[in-house]
Length: 404
Figure (cartoon, one colour):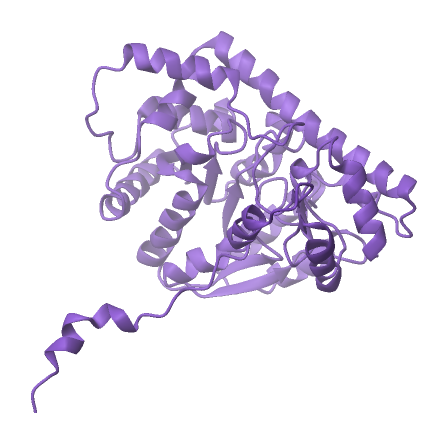
C-alpha cells in the first residue's frame, strides 16, 4: 500500500486548538464586553488612578537619550550587556554579593524567559529532578517547567482560613522533600495570594534548604512593589548570604513598567568565582540554542536609567508612587467594602503585598460578578488590586457585597 500523499501534505490540519490562557483569555472576553462600567481585575499589569498602564517619565527620558546616541543595531552579547547584568545583580543581591564574583547574570526576555532558561539549565545540568511550586502559584509556572521536561510537585503555602502563609505546613513539607530537588519561592508580593514570608521565616526556609540540600529558584518579579527595593530583596539576600547555590529570575516589567519590552534576567549564585564562570558558560550555551541573543532596547532603557544618578532618583520616586498607589488602594478597598455593608472581614487585603490578593470569593460569586456586573476576576478569586480606581471603587464594592 502507498501512503496517502494528501495526508502528509496537510499533516497540520489535524492539530487541535489549544485552550485559551486562563488569565489572558479573560482579557479577550473583557474587551468584547460592551458594558460601559465593566471592570477588569484579572490581568497582572499596574494601572494608575485613570486605569492606564503608564510609561514612566524616567523611561521616556532614557528612550530619547538612546535614540540620540544609538550607533548600531548589531547583536547583543549572548548573555546581554555587561553593564545591564551588573545593575541587575546589585539591585537583587546588594553591592557586596554582586561584586563577590559569585553571581552569574544573563539578560533574558522577561521573567518568563528567565524561568524557562532556568528550567533548561536544571534539566540539562542537574538532571531530572522535581520542581516544587507553592500552592497556589502563578498559573504559568507549571507549564514552563513541564515544557523543560521537569516534573512538578506542590508544597502548602496559602491558608485560606487565616488569609496568610501556612508556614508550618510549608516548612514540614520542605523538610521531607527529596535531596537535590528544586524549590520555587516568590521573592516578594506572592502571586496570586499577596501573602509574603516574614524575615524570620526566610531564615527558617534557608536553614531547611541547607539541611536538605535543596536548590532554591526565586521568582522575583515585583521588587519595589511590596515595601521598597531593599526590603523586598531581603528574602533573596537571606538565601544568598546563607551560602546556598540559588537561581533568581528577575523582571523589570512591573517596577519599570516595561511589560512589552520583555526585560528580565536570570542570576545564579554559586560558592566561588570559578564555579560561577562555569555556570555562565552553560547558561550562554542554553541561550544560544533558544533565542541566541537578548533584545537590546528594554535593557538599554534600564541601563541608561541606572547609569545616571538623576534618572535613578526619578525612577525610585516613580516606583515609590506606584507602590503607594497599590497600598492606598488596598486601604480604600477594605474601607469601601466595610462601609458598603460587607458581612465579612476583608482587613487581610490591607496586610498583603503587591498587586495581587485572593479576595475570598468563590467560583460561583466570581461568575455572578462577571455575568451581572461585567467585573472580571480570575476563577480562583484572585484580584489585581491595581485595577481598582477611584472611578470604579464604589461600583465594585456594591457588586461584591451583592454576591456575598
